[in-house]
Image (cartoon, rainbow, N blue to C red; front, side, top):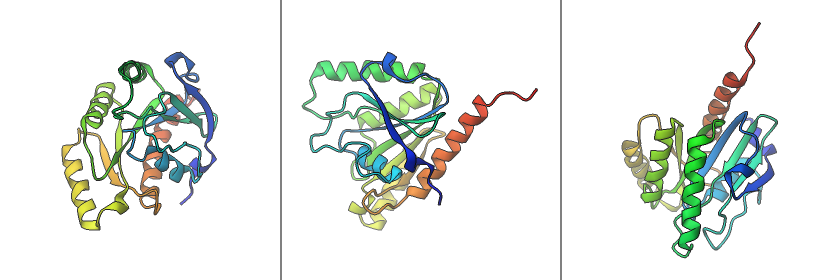
Length: 205
């Protein structure tokens, strides 16, 4: 399967909303708890070992890191959350930044919500689902580290999470280690970005 996301390159790290690139074209955000495997998923998707930096100390990235795919498409790596040692002031900043992002970002076409398949649907995950629902933004749940469970246990978790999702949200299993689930994720992203192109295309005269 053709992978148009291999060409993704780092663009900017935004500590404040106003530092983000122009709100045009199409943007897909990746969200997830600090230790859910978000960076590994992005690296697996883009087939680049260190595009999104992985860290042994979760929660260190408190900025929106933007990667450009081409002139009209971007990924936004949202700050990881849920690491106990993060100071309250940083948590408050994160919450404010995320609220502004979801309320204001018109180019946002969808959110890939990354959850560890062994610990899904935690408080943060439910909050993200609520934000997506309130903003009218589609959400696709990526149950990462699927290789850590037996096939039966992973399938059981998949069905359980699917049952608990809000209308319009979708879910799949994913393993960055084994590259399992990548074609399914690419299909979702292609669909979202195609919708963005239709919305931004000039009207025929």
